[in-house]
Image (cartoon, rainbow, N blue to C red; front, side):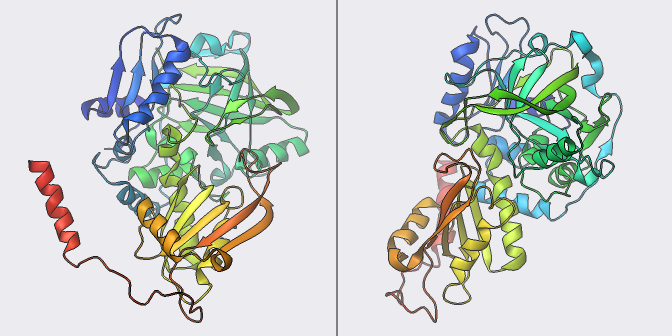
Length: 473
């Protein structure tokens, strides 16, 4: 049964032993972020964390690390919690094939219970804000869905974007927001500013787990995240109409913030500890003016710790970065078997494929860099044979160490685009690299690869047998 809100998902996590309630009194800083930071050290089975006794706050309810393990990610998809990561990616791809599934509009959204408008708006009275890393320039909303429409085609539902963008609180009714140039929000804002208009937006916090996944999924400009959410849920995604802006927002959100990005207004924002594992410096960014806040009674404030990988964001953005690249590459190269783009949101990608002829793997690597996501992110590609599992790093390292001739198999392409947040880049530019770790095929006849050692035919059966014996001992 799909989840319609965050609370129903937290209930299932608790039932499955994947939610830890911390009832001792904690400090907002550094305890909350430190606990979420520490969760990664518990491995791929780490639980979500729930705090309700935070010093200095009255009746605060804070959820962290909700997507922060492969078990939690599997449960978000409605899969058994023990589902292996490769199987989760394959199931994600299978469900994507059912896209689009139209959403279901509902009334009586729970976030309509309470409202602040105009001069009453005060984020500090609704949200228990805290810093995530000690070098952050302020409080951030880092696990929110931001909804906007194309000002040039406002009635086109498919051009309504649901995305994730970093937002710093710079006042009780102001946010500084960073719309990365390659993302849809930046395109909407540019179109609005060219017309001399503000851009209406809605920001939703505490969303159901699939909305959080699709909001970070690379999609085509005219593809609806809500229709993808329906495909991943296996049922229409529930949405409601935001009362001030008329935007379509998730029905089950804890908090809905409405306002505008003010035309041509900029505010200093940052620094912020990013998904790259480095701080990004301060920049002048667009400003959100908040005109209305709607929220559930006793709202749960969901936040996300991010820093040096792996943290929750790497689980949250892993499969939904792999699958778009997989689908886009397979559409042109059906020889592509699997894509692992889980490293720093796809700055590094590992692709397994069957080869047609010598040089074919390098061509696939170049195409990965020119997909919609690859233009801004994919800066390193490793190509491996179809019998190498790109999710099994020892196999990948074996292929790279045994099959790569650096003179022939490493290609450097200078001066290509990358997101400004990439630490190795400079002003949004970087050199990109392809490593061809596949076995050469004709007319490429280099090396001595004629007699590879293969797994014994019985090994797969024995692997299953040994797992059974371990589970029953």
